[in-house]
Length: 199
Ligand code: URA
Image (cartoon, rainbow, N blue to C red; front, side):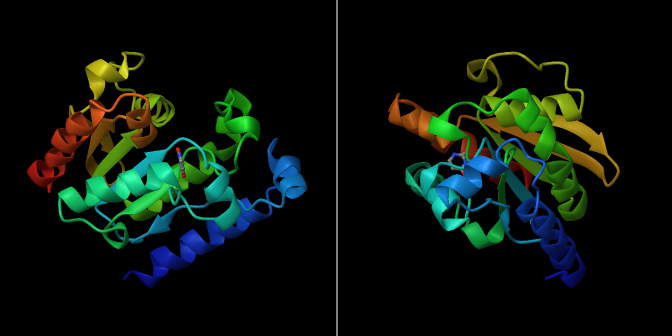
């Protein structure tokens, strides 16, 4: 493990913990919630990006540990990957009230942290889970397909350049989408096979 990467991530995490300027800081304090920073391998080749923590995540301070997280774990297992092999984070690091969608000001507040996580880890693949992460990453890398529906984007590999060279972007449905449409489970299993193709 790269100690330097780990230390840099720890430093960023501290900044998020103390981010009193966040529009979600007060809600965090009121609810006794924890901020949810990324976790996993600081040298991971695959980075998963979700939307924002849910209740269980905010209670434990860990990403994707609730129902959607169990779903994510099962997809990882389908391609012989473990949570420790990858890095898992979110666009927004604090839980929005009532599970509502994150607002633009909240996304902008946490954007510098996600960008730095990417810069430190330098993953080979960024897998975006759902609309918010996909929009964020397509914006960041100026991918022309931005704005297309997840139905058109999921499971396709988009190539982009960043300071560390070529990066593969793989948009995926958010694991929680499967609770509303069971057919997506098969689709996700198929889309996860793409990791084997890229790595
Ligand atoms: N949904 C997300 O987008 N992120 C989490 O960490 C948990 C659920």
